[in-house]
Image (cartoon, rainbow, N blue to C red; front, side, top):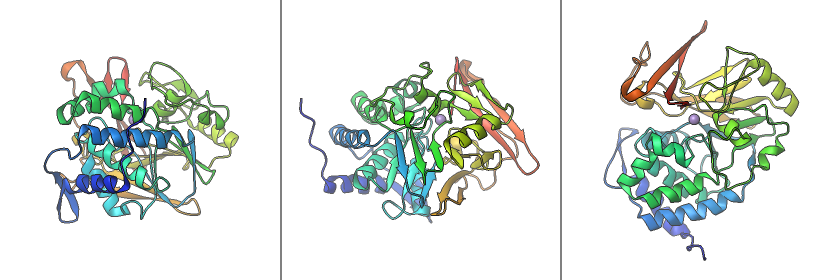
Length: 354
Ligand SMILES: [Mn+2]
């Protein structure tokens, strides 16, 4: 069977233009979407097939030079993605590393994926995409992306995008010192080269307990020192002792990850041992700030923050627990001397997701 012809550069540029013009500005912000999804199912398929082939050529552990912007969870917030590009520079003027969770929860995961894949094809060295725990077909059935594809295009479109998910690399390392991934580290990981050995395309099964599952599902925890099975039902919780030992063993300065909603957009465990960056402001209407992380040439880094569009101030307390339809929402509040931040974990049956 022959593969469909890859879209030409001209065609991809036209997709980018159509996707960007779907968002209407208000002042210096992208305020709302207008019109229908601008790509047809065959056009999206062409984009997916070509980007899947390109992604499979990359190693599972992508080696990057510093001087780029790291972006955490977007979760279908296309306007938030455009605001990030607006502030940091649209590709290729700025280099990006995205830590996954592009889709689900928010309404515009198709727009997010189509734009990111188009940029990946146009500027493969300027934009890098890693896999999150939501880049798994079974998860998208439950958390919105499947329904979004049916509503905007078709089930076939969903299958095409899911086939790209299975091609995404799991991790990147910046300047040989910053390990970047969606969830966290794994006690199974003895040598970083084992990330390169993960065969792709790789379906992602949260019940598999394999290395890939750990990398996209794990979380740091201030409450433990070593390793504990993650209360999300997949991956691990790792404490500061486990983290520092892992860093020493692999010669790393810091682990950079996403995967948890942080009220302030970013947070850290230890003294900069593990950094969390979350890039979807007002995620699920929670009023949280979003953040991106700029990594300078000397591996120092700084955060840019993005305030929620709908409200000026961050609420003093998290929203009330949501117990509708058998789904319990747990909000954990962590207090410290300097800041109060909360993590949102949605528990559905036996898995918990951000
Ligand atoms: Mn996640």
